[in-house]
Length: 295
Image (cartoon, rainbow, N blue to C red; front, side, top):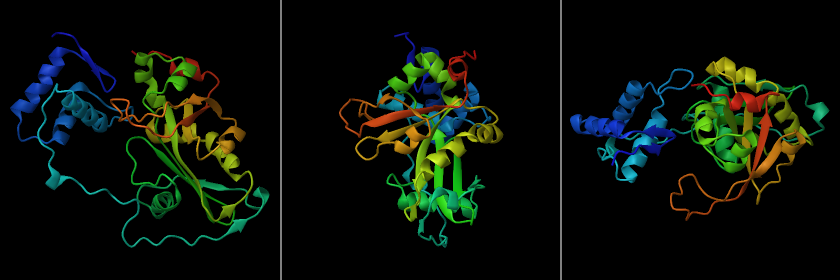
């Protein structure tokens, strides 16, 4: 068998599969994490900010093992880290006050990008873990958090943007992506994975106003943090729970729905909530930018 295989968005020829098997066999004491770091280093598999893509590489070798292509060392349970809580022990959350006002009574809003492990960063983790219906543990990969306060300094909302979905047919068709171009340019999208208006806040039109403010600055914020642009933002709204009114009011485009399958569903047997797929282009020539070959 001399055919190459595709895994984790990478075409892997048989010569590289033999190399992977040799790495495992020649270093029986290496952990899976050390193997992934070695793979990334040898393949120059890095993000645009220069970090090794260890998360993607680990996912790849795990999938190769599931398919019977690669035999990996046993997972070292004794050395596995416990999930890090989104806020440290002893953290005291800020007091939240009930706010029922008009939007003009709260503005101008202040929008903050919390420094890592700062008190504001811990506030975002606390709010999302306690009040967001999806919860929150920790971030992986490129991401930006926002903490929003009213003009008196009261915390009113927080948002999290992270890695875009690997593939979804309505979005990819809207952009005009082939599989190869998507794999090349997926990092030029970001996903609004969390948006929380704190439960004590009752202010009409606040959510769409915040989205508008964030969309006007996120491209600059992303380039400042990661040294590369983004051209579009996506989000997924559970149809059974929400209507996505604030996104539509902020001029996001609904391009279709998910199929109700999980990305972990290898055999099409799992059923997950169907979600509306909403997109917000950040530049006029976003399709051209996202379909550009960078080879």
